[in-house]
Structures are given as structure tokens and as C-alpha cells.
Amino acid sequence: MKIVERPSPNFNERVGVAGPDILIMHYTGMQSCEAAVARLTSAEAKVSSHYTIDEDGTIYAHVPEQLRAWHAGVSHWRGESDINSRSIGIEIVNPGHEFGYRDFPEAQIEAVIRLSKAIVGRHAIPKRNVIGHSDIAPGRKTDPGELFPWKRLATVGLGVWVDAPPAHKAPLARGASGERVIALQAGLATFGYGIDVNGTYDERTEIVVSAFQRHFRPANFDGVADGETVARLKALNEMLDRIA
Image (cartoon, rainbow, N blue to C red; front, side):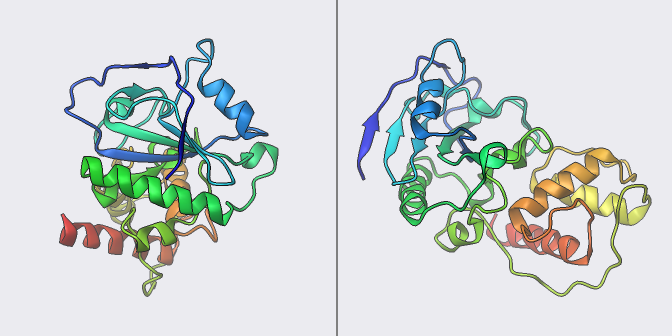
């Protein structure tokens, strides 16, 4: 696995943890790999990641894994908010939704898998903590987006996935309230998302549901908790109970 060193000055020490236990996938959202790498290695930009992977599979290393890169921003996962201290960030070159979002090339995804398996092996990162930027920052971020092959990664032990289970419940949407909304919000919080369990299907709930769908049901991420969405969330939490 060839790795090109392009060091970034944007890092500090991890805070309050022995090492990383989360792996976060991003897309660069810029018009070229060189533009993204330049930004991630610019002192003025004050952002960084541990790695960037170009569309041809070339891997650029920016920050050593033992150090805290600046990639997560304001975020939340499984009750934690200093996600930079707990995570390793991989930037995946793609113009993103702003500049012409497109499929991720095969060579790039193969490199993502090789690098990620090595990272997960080195740090014993649990499957449930291989996630996207949109999972830790719903609404604020949408990357790596609905075209990212999460199911494929899960088949090689990177993340979790369930295929569509039977779905019989009527959909829940903005304005709904009651016990079913409480159960939905509790399920999302149990899985790891930052959401209050208040029994009201408010704007935040819609945003978090959309983020969940973008990752786990990318064919439709409209923020409506239809029967399939609720069934997938339930099945994923049951899976996590078994593998915890």
C-alpha cells in the first residue's frame, strides 16, 4: 500500500483518550485532489485529516494516527462531542454535492478498504464506529453521501449493514408525536446519533432520520421515518446487541 507523505501543520494532542476508537469517512467536496490536499496542509485553513485518498487510489498521509487531526468540527457520536480526539479521518476525493457529486471509482474504494482495514486493525475500532461525517454532524454535513458504498465496506468488516427487513408500520413525519416517536428517537440515540428523546418529530428528528437514511437506506433520504427506515434501525440495534 503506497502512501505519499504530505504533512499538515494542523494537529494537536488527543485529549482524554488513550487512542482513537472512531473512523470517519469524508469526501473532500473540492474540484481536485490537489486543491483538497493544499487546503488540508495549509496552516491558514486550520483543517486537516489523517489521510486523503485520490480517485486513482493514491493515499496521502497528513497527520500521524496518534495525533488529533482537525476534521470533524462540531459533532456528536455515542454521547461524545470531542470527536477529533477520538477519531481518525479519511478524506476521499470527490467534488461533492456542490461541484458535481459522482460515483467513487473502483481504485479509490479499494484503497479506502485497504487503508481502513489496517487502521481498524491497529486501533481495534469497533464496526459500529466506522461512520460518515454526516452521521456525526447531521444537517451540517452530507458527506461522504448516498453514493458511498457502505454496504460493500460492511461486507469486509468495516461498519455495519442490514438489508431491508419487513416493514409494516405507517410512516412518521414532521409534526408527529407520541410513543412511536419516542421509540424512534431512542433507537437513533442508542445507535449513536445526537438527538433528544422528546416525543416530538421536530426539525432535528427529521434531519437525523435523513442522515441515517443517507447511510443505511440511500435510495430515499427524505427524513420521513417510513416502515423500512424504522425496521432497518431496529435491526441494526439488534445486531449491535449481538456483536457488542
